[in-house]
Image (tube, rainbow, N blue to C red; front, side):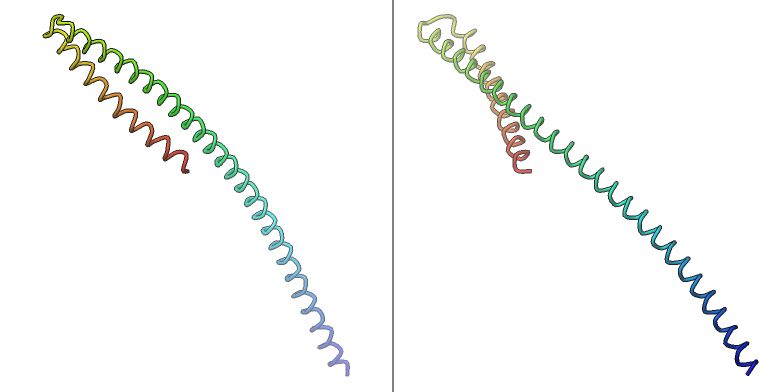
Length: 130
């Protein structure tokens, strides 16, 4: 009987040791879990900050594109007026060689502005769709 009692106490001691080890491991795992939760929260916060910054930069880009489009359209109108004036000079019989040269230069400039306007408009549209 004494032997059975000693064996029972020995088993209880081992159970207590295992229980203590498991409790210690549970506490460590809970600590790790809490650390990971904190890290996840920090990463989510950083991600939100980056997304807000990206949105802000996209809005600025759209604004700058729209501003540039306005400038290009104003320049386009100006060049169209200059072209009309040159045609009027031609019809009045002024120095045709110089007028043709100037007209060609303005036509080239107008084409360049229209190309830039198309690119900027496409860029602006692409940024709006994001």
